[in-house]
Image (cartoon, rainbow, N blue to C red; front, side, top):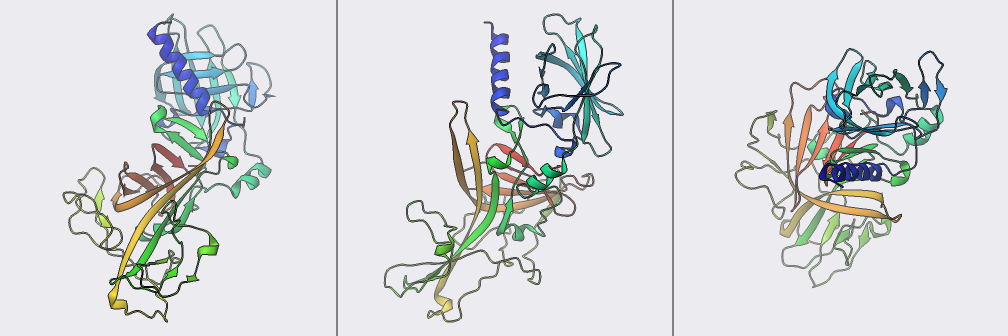
Length: 404
């Protein structure tokens, strides 16, 4: 087996692994494609097929599929199955055309036309295997009403989750994405299923400690003694502790968003491409910040109110207050050997910055919030002009809302 054959076989395995899920059609409303590069890594599973001069006929889910990467088109289906080399991709009046070429015989050429509607949703595919073959149309299906209703509770839809400002992100905002892209697997796009239980949660934990290490504590989101992480168990909330001479802390849960509260200090906003010369500091003295050359003139998150209990038997001036910000990523992962497990990852956020793309199209990524993670690559939250979350990038993956 030569090197080229080995690489092709490896890519086939990666594609098969990435889409090794319960079979399901690709629905028209699943995804929007406004540029050719958004096709890379996507796998279309049509529901109907129409041969020249014939009528559209139903096809079983997964019988035909078209997976697109930067170099190849992976096709499944009787008489057309194979790996086709991509020669070029062009934008057309109906959408996009991917021109294919046989790697062994460059004279054998074909194409895949991707037909989109006015907002970029794919309605169908037109495939021609070679010069001597005729075009065959493959239709995507409108999502059935019962499927749409059943999935509505599992996914965050485009335009559904609005975050008024960066401070508001840390009040327990939870995102349940519909699609993810694996950046470390060549940009393979994977449709998330409800059973995958994928979610991202943004929250903060504020800890109050008496400076002389004597404190009476009210605990909410108590830390797990074994893992050292905040607990979300309802039984740990609002637990009254007794006075002690041993060091103790008080942890307060993130307060509910208050539209009447004054906003936090202004975040330096820069146009796309400019150097970011200010970061927005999160928390108080104990919270780490970005390197000085990236974060001069730091501010604090004043818009996150701290509601101390009125009967706290401690002088509030003697309290040390620290705030830590987190992102939780939960996902049920399936592996090639047939095993699966629920994965939970928690990331600590040190600082954040906001950028603005003034040239973004309506509904596009106008705002980018960069989150400086502790000992990890930065994460990003992308929002449209109305501050609705479009996508989130973290842990080598990019997560999209349904219909994005």
